[in-house]
Amino acid sequence: MFPFFNNNKEQMELDEKNIPKHIAIIMDGNGRWASKRALPKKAGHKAGAQALEKISQAAIDLGVQHLTVYAFSTENWKRSEEEIKGIMDLLREYLKNYIERAKNDNVRVHIIGNILPLDKDIQQQIIELERLTNEKTGMNLHIALNYGGRDELLRAIGKLSQAVAEGRYAPEEIGEKELEQYLDTANIPDPELLIRTSGEQRISNFLLWQIAYSELCFVEKLWPDFTENDLKQAIYHYQNRERRFGGRK
Ligand code: FPP
Image (cartoon, rainbow, N blue to C red):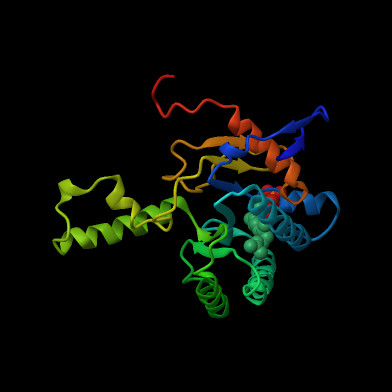
């Protein structure tokens, strides 16, 4: 039983057998949340990190197998040095916390994106956390860091071209499967549902290949205000949409 309340405050229920296996989230609106309160941007990102904790637990409770969240994009480097430092410091804290909890948690943490431009100590925390949680059997939490869909595709195409140059594939053998194995999301099912908070209706270079058939759910609330009930409402919308994958009912 997964009860929740709709916008009219009526109690509703989710279909437990139709929970998306993979949910992707663009956690947008931290900056506006802070501005509304005359707080520095970092306070918004901190509240965003707390919301991520809550929503990860809610996803676990619902039986979601993969949760992918956009924490830092390849374009976010354009922000002020101060804001970038604020996000990186929060990330250090978040990863440290996760490493400490790894023994007791059953979440497998996996980073997507190119981590090489991140500070060395953060790269080490990532490697450590992925190692500590690699055998976990609970939810997979994929955190996108220095991630861009185009960058991911270019990196994958580079590796695939190398494989062709070495004679491991003939060009005509390359299909979706061959490309997918070089994506950061290799062996992860595509998200059935993509949620973006803060009212913006854009994809912003997130999971460009993987969301070809995802249901898109744009939510007005700013990310730090997003709750477990909001997650359930988004899943309810998903459950009540007809997915045809280009075919007919
Ligand atoms: C978008 O809000 C959010 C980000 C660019 C960063 C997301 C970061 C977090 C949720 C916290 C840190 C993450 C971890 C894993 C510790 P925005 O700043 O673009 O909001 P705005 O559009 O209102 O300015």
